[in-house]
Length: 442
Image 1 (cartoon, rainbow, N blue to C red):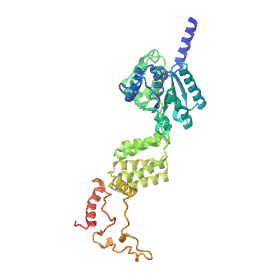
Image 2 (image 1 turned 30 degrees about the vertical axis):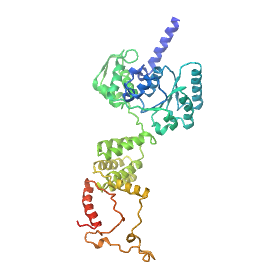
Image 3 (image 1 turned 45 degrees about the vertical axis):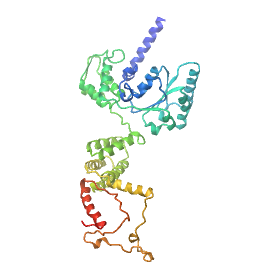
Image 4 (image 1 turned 120 degrees about the vertical axis):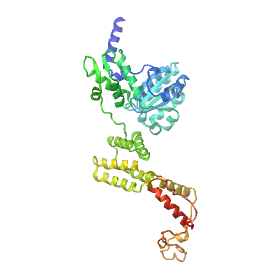
């Protein structure tokens, strides 16, 4: 028996040596878990579900390195459940059915429930996800599904409706620094057996470079320490910069990254922040976004959000679209940058957007108007017999180019210019126009 214990200890030591630091430093209990306080902090929903022992099916959604897998393992311990893990990338329906059958048998024979962690659950097709429904409803398994894609789009709606959805957020820099210091000080699982002098600036640099990814932060720390030889290690900014790998952009052209970044670009331009707009444009360019998609969005925004407050916005956006088509990357990035910064700095108005929306809503709701007789086409044979065009007052025959006559047949205001940019001039002119159209004096 002693020899067997020594062998097991030696084997575990060898495993620990080959395991990366991020794996060795996984938290052993909920109290060691860092981040996600918005749903795991005291009084928050997931914590309440655990305290009430009512944890059912949950979906963890968020970027890599934020603790989805780790928290699933910890929940198994908290709920005193048997932990089983399956990957939707490498497993099929048969593997899933086998795990569910074992879980059912375990419950029937008086055993504990199974916490089934399904990694990349969105990779299962609809029929594969349907396999889970019965056992989730019956409470045979505690399902924890993890995905980097929005579950409301990527996961079967029947499964989403039976699950609590928790969105994981990237760790903030303070959280990452806590993990780094813990790894530096822990002699058993971390790097505490090494003589490490860590400058605050170096740890802050790791936290900044990792973009909230704990796994990446710990990997950068490990590379910096292990590549520095056996002597004392002085963690400096230069050493960290040489040890940090460039982060791959999480950007699927058909997934959340694509739509979320496009949304951030448009909202930054609409919000008149050219710096944020340039950053999100850069993300899209670095991720290989389709340039035509970007230019289409800019042309739309030029009318939707700038409109007549700056009449040059639309021609500029169209010119940028044509330039990108003609020039291509990488040079067309200058045209895109010019368009994005111009649109962001331009005065904003959605008066035209609101106006057409209200007019179409009136039509959809049945508030339709016949074309007034004097506005109808009077050029075809027989139109005069119908009286079409009679009484039409030709605007150019008036000194101010405005004929006081009905064009709609009912008083309705759709276009309401804002007091910004060129539209403020249109607003003043429109006061004169509307007074004339209604036959009043100006």
